[in-house]
Length: 364
Image 1: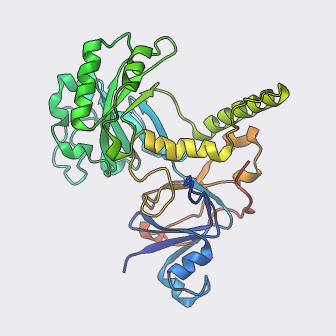
Image 2 (image 1 turned 180 degrees about the vertical axis):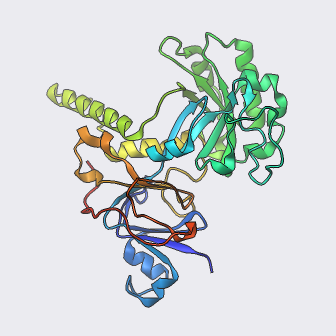
Image 3 (image 1 turned 30 degrees about the horizontal axis):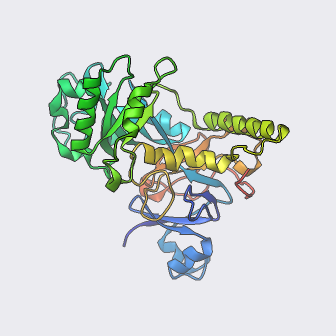
């Protein structure tokens, strides 16, 4: 029998436009196999309700009205070192990362988690050990690094997008550092190898010419349902709820200005749910992370159980929201100190969370 965990009585925001809200879901083998109502889940399992004696065959997590959202994705391309536990503490469950650090391939020898027989020469704490890193990773190699180390991408398994860690694309620096010849070479390489091309922009080097050239290209990744080209700023410190607070306040100020000026051509107002979708579903698509960013059947069971009800917290206090628990691929990647949340498949017992919360409407 396949072990199954049931999450019931929650306030689940799915980031899925077809079913934005739910109250229950079930997880098996690290994937979601049901999203909907608690009653619908019981019927799906052939049970009469939560008090059916046969429910003891499953692990049941009573969310008690807690807010659940998909895990956040940092779609900007991070370089340097990063700590998986600290990212999970922030609720970041997937990210785009530069594959090169200090002139070396920091993922070499670890992209196949079943082959740990060798390490790259000079391997140290700067290398990412995939088995020990919980997040999903979308890797982008700088073009100059790939030109100097063409063997890095000789293993095509690295580009399989359904893997937890995969190579998504090639990154180019802005126009100040990239010649037209380099741009064309990188573009041709991405087309031949079904990779994204990412261009780094900044305030002093927006790379307008390169972006205009890319806009003229026909998509070469249509069958993969990811953008063939993207831009990034890089090296930003993404703190999810702080970023959402800043974005939401900016949107509110814009809406107030439009209302005060009776602007008939005002831009649409984007609420909290749109902000969450942007940092989960859309960010996962942008970074080419397969099965991430949305809570729907078939996707990874990767989500956050928050420490408070999003529908009842003022916008000004959004940066105080934290994950009580971060689940990645069905397992606990982080839990807040004092939380009693446990999962049986991680050799623990108990089905409690740290406190009761009153359910409410997620939209703000």
